[in-house]
Image (cartoon, rainbow, N blue to C red; front, side):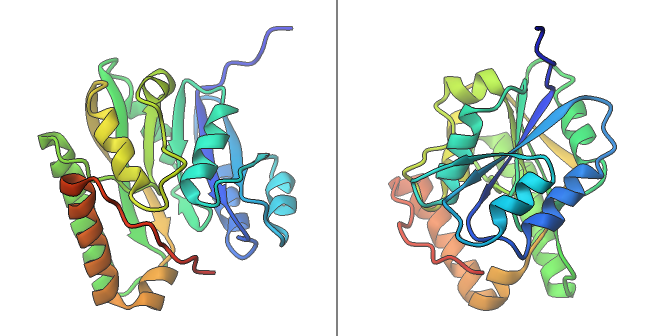
Amino acid sequence: MVKKRIDISVIVPAYNEEKYIGACLAAIERQEFNGTYEVIVGDGHSTDRTVKIAKGYGARVVEESFGNASGGRYIAAKKARGRIFAFTSSDVQPCQNWLQDIHDAFADKEVVWVVGGVRPFEGNLLEYAGAGILNLFAATFNRVGLAYVNGDNVAARADAYWKCGGFNPRLTTAEDTDLGMKLMHQGKFRYAWRATVVISMRRVRKWGYLNFALFHTGNFISTHFLRTPAKLYAPIR
């Protein structure tokens, strides 16, 4: 039997995300995409209805035991069959043309990895401004060799992903930055302005804007220049 060609594997890590994962997978299901895709959820042994909801949307579910989002992405990618891996998160809702815009960004054969934009879910003016700054950083920093990646919206060609080692499942934080640092050595980067996802503000609001900004700025500096990303990142549900 000839296996169906898969253009994009959508990879979603999850742990006890019954409140959010349904909206994420429903948004993926509504995609206007001319190609073929699959959805794989890397689940950290959830004890709620996460797995049941994921399977209800037709996602394949694989279990990870690293206990972090990077482990979920790593294990799910090992089961992926797509030519392109697109990574997002279980509390994120991709916009309707997300997959098509990612696919189009790889039309240039020299492009091996892509980062897309983010915007806040039911955000206020400050949150929209913050997201705009993050998008600007991602669009510019990666072009000059300083990896600035949001794991909620990053994609790579499967061969380049595995050649560089993929997500490091041992990292609790900055796993997306680490991946970007490695992908830079594989080939050309492209920022896909239209490939946007809507992200939850639950951690930002729980921590507070200042604490959130200070943590991630410090972790960005520590990861790039000291190679010591933070080891603690408390889950927010």
